[in-house]
Image 1 (tube, rainbow, N blue to C red):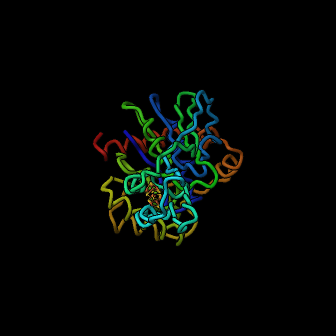
Image 2 (cartoon, rainbow, N blue to C red):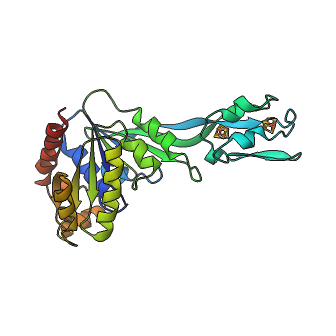
Length: 280
Ligand code: SF4
Ligand code: SF4
């Protein structure tokens, strides 16, 4: 079963929930860190890394000796990843290239070929019984969805995969939660929390994936998230009150279940209730 943990905004405790769920479950369990621009699950899990490899994607390369500066490639590219400076040169912006091969196919001079470009890293490791996979996008790269897809290819066919999604509701989050079995939306009971939760709920509804809410620091702020959940008939899977010990542990990269061991069974029950809801 693939369970994504997402939130409409950063700083809600999404990664904390992900790593604590993963470490509370019995094997086989996997934690995938798909927040490839800023992966931080490893800070809490401290996995022993056994494999690190570069990941590549194909980008265009122009042979100017064949080019007649017709402009067809620049006209075709919807991502502004290739631009023709008439009779001077053809500029490529690989960070923005989606690898669609359109420019290669449209070039009448066969001046464009593809080359492989390293755009990030994939790491695999073990944190006790939890298999960990994470992606790390190179600085300056914009194609995080491509790396997220590579990370998700590592999901095994058995066991439970907990997938830590990037914050927000744009392409990286959608790529992460797409084709999962359930989405846990982590939020806070504040006006900002509610606003971003509503956006995340709309995104997950469009994808037709079952979902529920975890309310972190549930005793701060107001009751509007609770009222919204009641009104929309969204299950509140868990509420975690503000706790100084949890906050101190977080700041030191220590798991919540290591300072409050009684939380372990609560995280296990959370997954059991998801399995019941998801019917898997
Ligand atoms: S389509 Fe080919 S020939 Fe035309 S400008 Fe681009 S690279 Fe040059
Ligand atoms: S491969 Fe596609 S996205 Fe990349 S430069 Fe060519 S047309 Fe643009």
